[in-house]
Image (cartoon, rainbow over all chains, first blue to last red):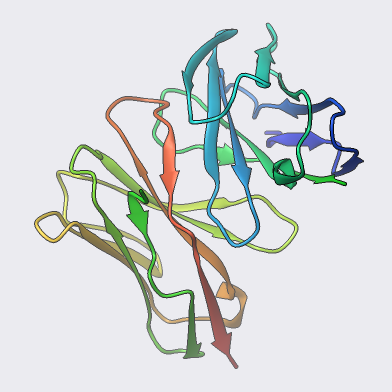
Length: 111
Length: 113
């Protein structure tokens, strides 16, 4: 059984640029959630995708957007990057359960 | 407003002793509570969960206790091992499958050999 994978591992971008982060869900999981973890904080919910539709969104501006594909993999897109977007971005997958299973994350640095 | 609070940033215990990690919450609508463990450069790993209709759930060395009236839960690790040294996050979930998780800030556990 393959776990949740994310790419890239690390990324450095300049303020104002756009970035795309990718996630492959665990085998058999049809739901993907994205979280942002700032330094010294717990993960914060960005949004969730279920069967290719957004299924809930946290307190993040519209420049954070996402997609889910028919194979349940997902992308997180962030436009007009700001310095405060520097964080660890975590993807989690689940299937009809409370438990969510996380990938290793993508470390984004905005300079 | 933080709905899930882990007020102690760190805990240090001796190998073989009990580790007790505490968590408080404010939202009485939470239906499930979960504990995750996180090592550096890895994603959080699910440890154990408890439904709001229960007051205890046990899995090997890990036991979670829930006190709904106090809006408090705790994770007990017995016996503690050096490999348990990590950051532990308490998380809460609403009703229904695939509900979003609301996390605390985490507590760093160090188990001394």
